[in-house]
Length: 208
Image (cartoon, rainbow, N blue to C red; front, top):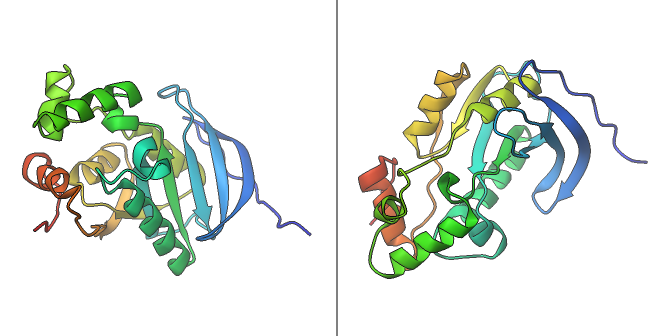
């Protein structure tokens, strides 16, 4: 007998279009796909436990990284962060992972590969974006805030090392109960990437 999936509350900004059970290697989640007029992209939420009208809900906002999440690239720490977030939510028994379709810090997959080529030539991630005519980071979190509103989350304990994410959620009216450190061990392949995050993008990292 399949598990019952409870309906989700509506939101004036966007609404869940489809909800289903998603058993995974990390535990049993609900996957929620959203109708999204905000940026025209399809975002999803993985939800564990009862988060409606709940305070201090463990949340991770994870921007899509095809090369890391799916292909196992070692140039970044995205896959490790994704898996660690799902493990932490499962350990807590309650939480939300927002999977946001913002590849390459919002510049898209093709431009991300172009940025990789520039990094192979010696540029860091910030200068590679600038060389392609983009700012450091094009991501926006309005849709994420609306998704949390649609799920009925009252306040968020955000897993992040990026102060800009905290500021963005507050700007869009999300109540924050705190920040949960989410640093992954550096490797020989991504240490320079992580140092650039710390030194040029203000991430709260203790990178050797």
